[in-house]
Amino acid sequence: MRLSVIILLILTCLPVWSLPAIAAEQPFRCEPTPEDEMGPFYRPDAVYRTSIGTGYLLFGTVKSARDCSPIANARIEFWMTGPQGRYGDDWRATVFSTAAGTYHFMSHAPTDFGSRQPHIHVRVTAEGFATLVTQHYPAKDAGEALFDIVLIPSPTQ
Image 1 (cartoon, rainbow, N blue to C red):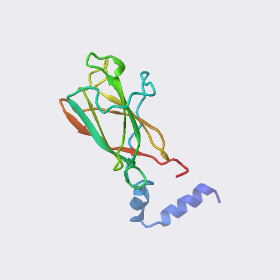
Image 2: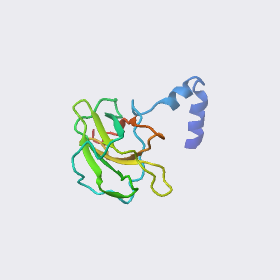
Image 3: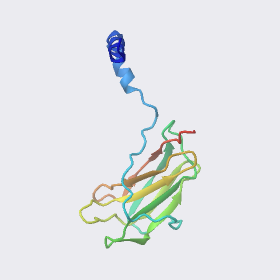
Image 4: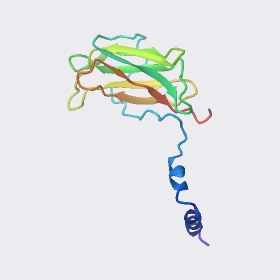
C-alpha cells in the first residue's frame, strides 16, 4: 500500500474534533518576533547609549519564544535615519536588556526614507538564541511604543 493512502486512512479515522487541536499545536508559548530586512546601512559596534534624540520612546521586554521568560543581557542594536532623513553614526545605538529582560531607547520620531514608511532597524543577539534582525514601525504621531522582542532558542538549547 502506498504511504499516501495509509496517511489518508489514518486521517479519516481521527475524530473530527481532534483536527483543530492538532493544527493549533505550536512549538513555542510566545510567538517569535518576525524577521525583517536588515537594509544596506547596518554597521556593527554602535556606541552604547539609550538615547539618540528626544520625542520617541521605544521600550519593551526581550523574551524567549520557548516559555516567554525574560532574557537578560540581550544586545539590542538600533539604527535609523536622522531628522533630515539620512543614515549616519549619530543615529545608531546599542542597549542591553536588564536582568528582567526590559530595555528602553529614546530617539527623535522616525522619518520617512524615500518611499518607505518611518521605521527603526533592530538587531538582537543573546547567548543561546538565534540572532534576530527586524524593524519597528511606529504608529503615526505616536510618542512611544511598547515593542516586545521574542527570540527563538538556538537548536542546541
